[in-house]
Amino acid sequence: MAGGELKEVVPVKGVVNVDGVPTEGVNLYLFRDGQFNSPIKDCRTDKEGKYCWSTNLACDGIEPGKYFLAFTYIPKPKKNDEGVDLFKRKYQNPVKNKFELTVVLGTPQEAMNYDLKSK
Image (tube, rainbow, N blue to C red; front, side, top):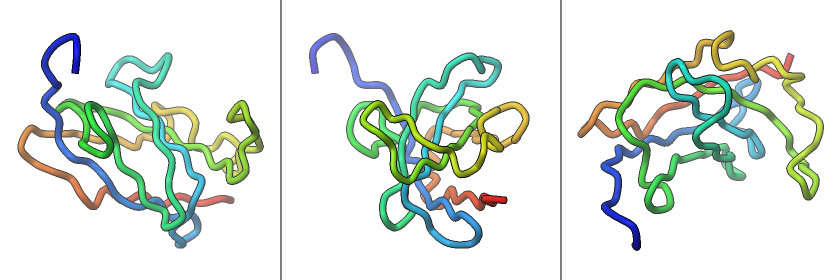
């Protein structure tokens, strides 16, 4: 990889359930603590509702630190990633929904599951 050293990361992955069911098409957005203008990373759940964060390589994890999350559920996005959020913006504010994630060096988090409601 050109341009420097790889960042030291910690694996973080899990499953997103919507109304108790693992769900494909949920977008997760990661914000640094205190920096809520724009997410620093995003990922999307697969057909089994699984997600993982990536920094240097696919699913390798994220840097240690404190983060907040936001979610949208757009099962059929258009080409520009636009579409109808079935959560109706309920989980788009990372401060309001209070989904916090603290990542500690050397402590993988391989069952960071989230249970969300569509109503």
